[in-house]
Length: 221
Image (cartoon, rainbow, N blue to C red):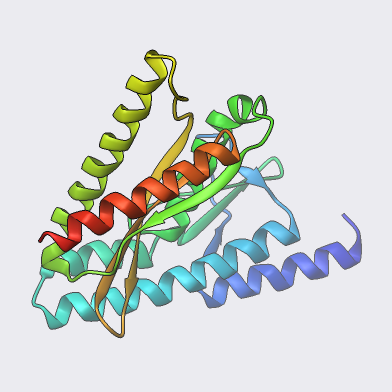
């Protein structure tokens, strides 16, 4: 490692330290593959940790205002996620909270899912990324809205599968994930699906049918 690289690495470690992360120099058993010990990797971890802590603190305050001790504890665990980094043989290792609301752990989970499906996606000639969303809702509405989203998507998928079996259409081929955003100012939730589909035809069809069915569903409630 050059002097310049060591200097940059030191700056990255200081940045992580300011966010509450310490480098562990004790003897410790590590598990997993770890990640590369590079300046860019350390800087990226520092940025993610800082953003994660800001979100966690806001969620702690929200839970405290509502008197929810369980969610307070949950979000403090998120705040302290990746609080210690262990280095071994040029690799970085850390302990994670594995909470669904933790941006650090979600990034790891997303990467694992992407790596799982990449071999399949590479065989597609025209992959498209689309988002299926709905209007934001309040907390007491969230569970019902998410269930409705899954029900509507199943209707669309089953319709295409049956038409495909009759030789009158195409089957939906893709990868779907559910995400939910939260507006701290308005205290409203925005659940939505992200989909990577095989081609533009599937993407356009999904968007069109989603908008049509969801509009009819909400207009009758």
